[in-house]
Image 1 (tube, one colour):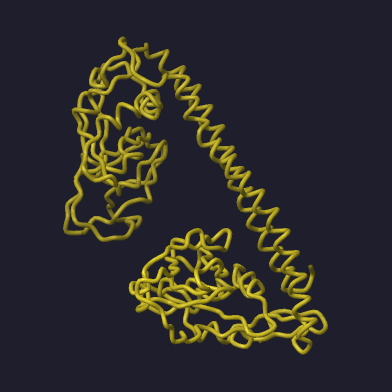
Image 2 (cartoon, rainbow, N blue to C red; image 1 turned 135 degrees about the vertical axis):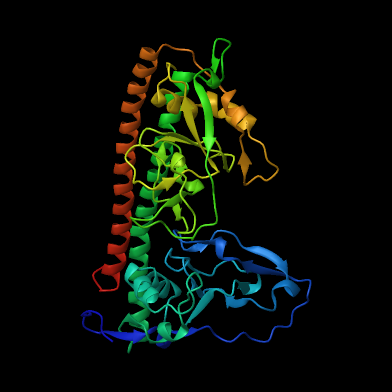
Length: 419
């Protein structure tokens, strides 16, 4: 059962020895109309390890079919992907000291002499979640951590034969851990602000270049575009196409400035590929149907695999042979606030989660009228700015990974008695 060497006086126990796992619910005498705490899975903050929101519902709505827990219990998501994402929390702030939540919670109730935070910090470790995932049961997409795995899982405990000393040591280590993790959280919050500012960097540059709205001397995109085409979306197998298979682009293949060739579904062998719709380097693509934020999102195709077919939810621009237009310039223009305002105004659809824009509306969008050499100069300057922003984002992702590594290192030291 030992996972590593512990300090003198410490011992390995099981989670079942330090907590009651999924304890029985007591008999409750409560009026059906009484407001009662309820916590859905979405309300568990996987970063802070707390309930971001506690809903109040009439007792009648929650008393059957939900997981019962009490103040200071530890709740742990047992289903994928919530478990891997770290959804676990110490229950605090419950009305009348108890509440209910999704059936996808396991509950740990610490035994005498065990701190809730001791268990909670321990199960937040990557190693624990990796081991839990290896013991998943159930069908793909509905896999869960079984209670038997938790019952036998080892957890270190300081001085288990001396209750007072054990509690003092747990409190000292937990206090130290939480002080260190508070610094990590502060750094993470600063990091979030920097990421948000970086995300607005290109928007500001594009706004400065193209302005916020169309001008009277701007011209229709249709001035340069011979036609806009979209492909077909036959019934496909829900998996990416293999190297020698044909795939059809999914709507997620095109976001702002990014073409992801891996976002595709495999075309059935019974369907003859439409060669005219094959994606090629240099194509300028636009999302025809998507959320309000992503409808009209566009991307230039760079290197791409062959045998990818245009779908009916993605447009491709075809320019006049003699059109003096830079695809890169148009790509940047379509990302600018001035064009985004036009696109969102032109998009239709009653569903807030899905909007559409027609070919005629796209052809009617207004862009600056500039010479080809002016367009290329602007595109080159914006490409340099975009590459700089991308490099900065890459550095920020490394910082995010580093903060997570630091957090895990603190937890590892804590449960080895090194704090």
